Length: 327
Length: 292
Image 1 (cartoon, rainbow over the protein chains, first blue to last red):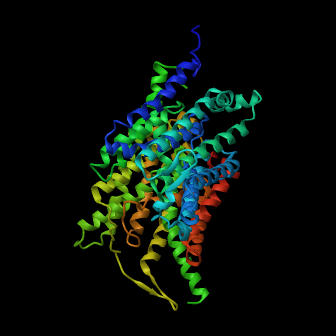
Image 2: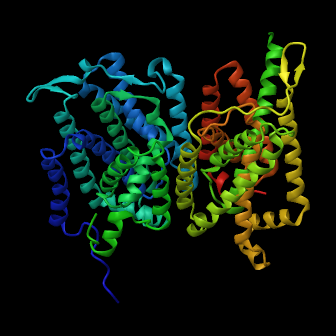
C-alpha cells in the first residue's frame, strides 16, 4: 500500500518561506512597476484579500456563499458613511467598517447556520440582495447607485510615529494594501495549519463523520462564516478608504461573484490560490476591457471552463501534481 | 383618486406582474423539479425573448400582421434552441452537481447578457403593442393590452396543465421528476427529457417576455429583476409544483403591486426577498423536496 501523501503544510519552514516571499516580492517590485500597474495593484491586492477571506469559507470549509457582497458592503458602508457623514478619520472609519462586518457576519451566520448546500447558496444570495436593496432604499444617506465620494480632507490622518499620512498618495495606497494583504496572509497561514483549520477541512470533507468524532461543527461553521465575513468587510473598508468611493454597486451580485471566480481560478482550498486568481484576472480584465465594453463575457467563459474542466484551479492543480505540501 | 380605485389599480398592476412571473417561474420550477438544476441564467432567456421580439417587430414593421404574432412563435423557439445548446455543451458535462451547475449557469448568465450587449447594444428599445384599446373604468382608464396579457397567461397555464397531466410527454416529465432512476429503468430517455425540459423552461421565460415587452422595454439588463422574483416564487410554491407556483406567483405579484403602489417598490422587493430567505432558513427542505 502506498503511503499517504505528506499532509498539507507539513514542512513548516519551507511553507513559511514561500508565503513570506510573496509579499516580499510584491514589496520589491513596486519600485520597478510602470505607473499604470502601480496604480492598479492596490486594488488587486484588496480584491485578493477579499477572495482569501472567501476561500476560507468556500475552499476550506466547503460552504459556497453567493452573497459575500453583503459583508464587503457592510465594511464599505461602515467606513464610508462614518467618514463621509461623521467625518471620522481613516483609522476610526476602518474600525467602524470592520465592526459592521463582524456584526453582519455574526447575525447572518447565526440565522443561516442550519442551511446546507443549495439552500445555503440561495439564502446568502437573497440576504445580499436585501442588503443591496437596502442600500438603494436609504439613498438619502447612501446616494444609492451614484454613491459617495470621500473628500480629500477625510483621507488624511496623523499617526504618532509615522507622521502625516495621506491615503491619496499612490505610495501610501500601495503599501497599506500590501500591509493588509500580508497580515491576512500570515493570519490565514497559521489558521489553516492549526487544529481549528484542520477541523474546518474535516467538516468540508465529511460533516457527519466530524460530528461523530465529537467536534462541535455548528460552532466551527459559525466561526468560519464570521471570520470570512469580517475579512470581506476589512477588504470593503480598505477599498473605500483607499479609493474614496462607496456605492450600491458594492452590494450587487457581481461583487459576490468576483471572489468566487478568483478562488476557483487560483485554486480553492489553497491559501495563495485567491491571490493568484485575483492577479490573473487583473491582467485579463485589463486586457479585455480596453477592447470591448462587454468584457464580463470573459468572466462567464472562465467560470464555465473552470467548473467543467479545471475544478482545482491553477494552484490546486499544481498542488495535486507536484506540491502536496502546499497549504 | 380614492382608496378603493387606487386599490383596484394596484390589484390590476399586481395581476399583470403575476401573469408574467407565473410563466417565468413555471419555467424555472420545471427545470428545478425535473433536473434539480438551479438555473441562474433563466432571466437571460427571458431577456432574449424580449430582444428577439424587438428584432422580429423591427423586421415585420410594415407587414399586415401585428409583429407580436410571429414573435410569439419565433422568440420561444430561439430561446429553446439556445437553451438546448447550453444544456448539451455545458450542463450535461457537470452531471448535475449542484454547486457546479450554479456556477456554470452564472457563467452562462454573464455570457448571454454580455453577448446581447455586444450584438444588440445597451439601449432600451420599445416595442409597439399589437392593439391599443383603453378600457374606460369610472375612475381611470386601463390598457386593454394589459388585460390581454393576463388572459393569455391564464390560457397558457391551463394549456400547460393539460400538457402535464393529460399527455404522454407530461407523464414522462412527471415520472422523471419523481424518480429518475426508476424512470430510466422503465425505458424513459432521461437525458433527452432533461434537454427538452431545459429548452421548455427557457421557452416559457421567452413567451412571458414577448407578452410583456410592449409594456416594458427590451433591454439587456431586464432579466435581473424577474429572476429574483421567480426564485422567490419557486421556493414559496415548491419546485416542480404547478399549482403551488401559480398560487405563489399570484401572491407575490399582488403583494408586489399593492406594496409598490402604497409604499415603495424597493421596500416591496426587500420584504418579499427577506420573507423567502427566512422560509428557506426555517425549512431548508424547501429546495430538497421532490415536489409534485
